[in-house]
Image (cartoon, rainbow, N blue to C red; front, side, top):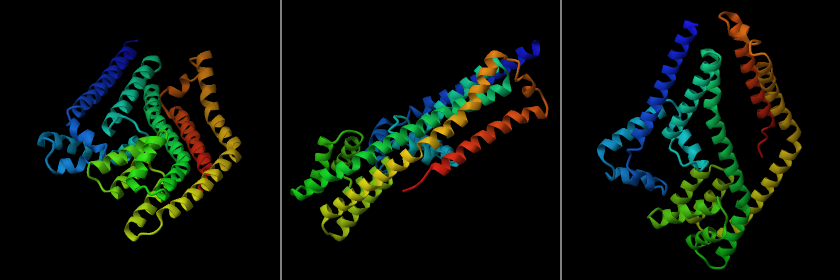
Length: 319
């Protein structure tokens, strides 16, 4: 009993220290210049920083934090994913959320079972924000791609009616539903703040992250440099994107049964383990004892995840 109490106190201190560290990091990030953060939404953050718009200490602090995340390979990719999901968090703040979820899972698992189970539960809860972010990003990208053919139709109509590109984009802001209206509004604001139309559209490609939008923006930029009938080009691209979306939906319908089977096969062992644990909490005790039996649940989890990933790769058909 004293050993279990000491182990719990040690785990609680470790979890509390992790929470304090991440909260301190979050409070530090909050001290960054809000003007520069606001300008980055319009694609002007780097220009303001280069002109000395933020204090030296704040620029140095931001540089150190970004360098830390970039050194771990998380900073740029995580920031891009948050932007594409339209999450109102920075990369470092999202890391704080992941660390808090891990610490919470670690404390609960250690309190109920033991430190080994706490690590497993902490890892699972730490992955929940990442999975949610991927879901939100995919949902937003699919919504934008589904709107893009209708957006191009309105854009082509506006161009053929004599509107300029900026005026046509403003019309899309007024008549399109989100997320398209929100992204094109950022483009119009960026142009109003001094960006070129090519740069503003390229920044939108980075914020959305879809191949369809990249194709459209590339066509617009090429027409700006070489000239030609932009309305006719966008009309052809709109038909191509519409056909591509139709094929993707047909693939989703044809692979729906296999996708559902993959989710069921992945969730069935976990659900069965939870049911057995509720009925007989001591059933899994031999697997948590020191020695080689601990490798069995770890190997089972690794094989389960690998099988699910392989099934998802097989069903991931690119058009």
